[in-house]
Length: 424
Image 1 (cartoon, one colour):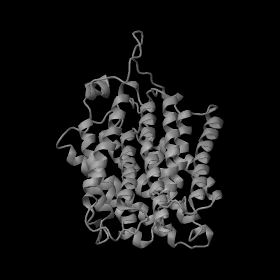
Image 2 (image 1 turned 180 degrees about the horizontal axis):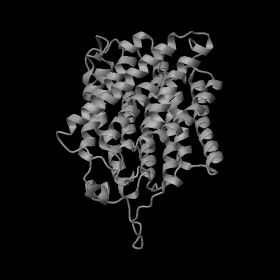
Image 3 (image 1 turned 120 degrees about the horizontal axis):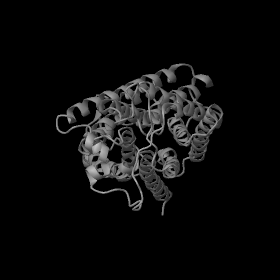
C-alpha cells in the first residue's frame, strides 16, 4: 500500500467516523427537546427529528448538495452535483465525493433540528414536513454555498470553520422567524403580559441530550479538518472543550449568585452556547480566547432568553439564544481573536468587517427565507396545530400514541411557574 493510499484511507475513516458523531447529535436534539417540553408532546419531538433525518437526507441528496457545492454560478448558487453526480471536479477535498457528501449531510440535518425546538408543542406536523424540505433543499444549501461552496462571501474572505454563522446563526434566525409567525403556546403569556413556563417533562433526559450534543460537537469541529493527519485536531478539540465548559460554568455561577440557586436549563443551554460560540474559530483562536468566547456566549444566551420573554416570543428550548446569539458572537469573535488577522492580534479591521458583513447577510437570509417559505406553506396547510390538538397534545393528535404508560394512578397535569418564580 502506498503512502497516498494509506493517507486516503485514514482520511476516509476519520470523516465517516466524525460524520457518524454528528448524526448521533440528532439523538441529543431529540432527548434535549423532549426533556424540555411537556410529556404530551414527547413523541412529536422524536418524529420531527426522524423527519429531519429522513426527508432532510433525501432532499440534500437530490438538490441541496448541488446548490451548495456544485460549480459556482455568479457567486450565488452551485449548478452541478445534484444526486452526487455530474461535474464536481472543482471540489478539492482529501476524501471521495461520497464521503464528503455524508459529512455535509450530517451538518444539514443539524440545521433543521435547531428550528424544531423553537416551534415545539404547537406547529402543525404537516407544515413542519414541508419546511424541512425547504430548509434542507434550498435555504441552508444556498447560504452554505456563499461561504463554503465558492460563493461570494467566501471570496470576500469570510471565515467560519465549522458553522457558527452558516449553521447556527442561520438556523437560529430561521427559528426566530418561525416562532414569531406561529406564535406562543396557549397559556404561555397571560392577559397582563406576564410569562409562565410549563414544567419540563424530564430535565435529566434533557441533560443527557446535552451531553450527546457535546460529544458530537467534537466531530462537528475537529471533523471539519477533513483530514486524519491535520495537526490542528488536538487544538480544535481542546478549545471546543474549554469554551463549552466556560459557557456552562458562567451560567452556573451567574444563576447561583443572582438567584441563590443554579438553574439547570440555563446551565445546559450555557454549555451549548459555549459550543456554538467556538464553532467558527475553533481552528483559529487560542485556548485563552476560547475561555472568553465561551463565557460571553453563556452570558449572551441568558440575556437573549430574557429579551425573548420581554418581546413575548415563545422559544421552548432556547434555540434563538443558544444558536443565533452565540453564533453571532462566535462569528465576530473570530474577527477579534483569530491568531492570523484578528483585530486584537495585530491584524486590523479587515477580517472583523468581513465577518460582520457575512453575519448580517446569513442571519437576514435565514429569517427572510423562512418567513417567505412559511407564508407559502400556509396556503397548503395550517402552520399551527388547532387549539384542541394543542390541548390534547401533539403526540395523540398527530401520532396516535403517548411516549409511554405512566401508570394507572398518574394524572396528567400542567404546572406553571408564576412570573416571580421565573429566572429572567
